[in-house]
Image 1 (spheres, rainbow, N blue to C red):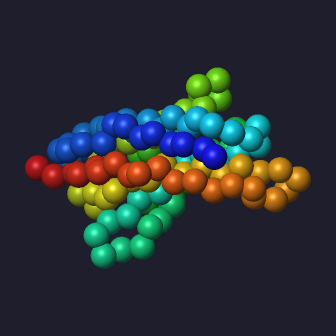
Image 2: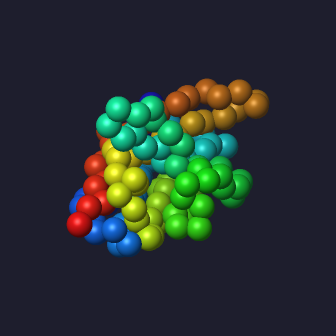
Length: 120
């Protein structure tokens, strides 16, 4: 089992910044990915950004140049720095982690979600 605890959501004006954090605990595999997805009302959940334990990162085109994902492996924590926020970034943001062994995904967990609202 892996538990994910998110923090950092809230209300921000357009052009502002927020930083999300997600701390993982439990039986975490050395080879893992951690990342953020979001879901706006009436829309499907979509990838925002992910980072692998080896250091690679991936971003949705809509957030490239504005959002930065980083991780502290010693703390099993992933961060999402969100700058130049837009109203269309408003969504519930979910932390996600997957663990890999032998090239196969062995687990897949989601956080409870944190609301990000961008509005004036």
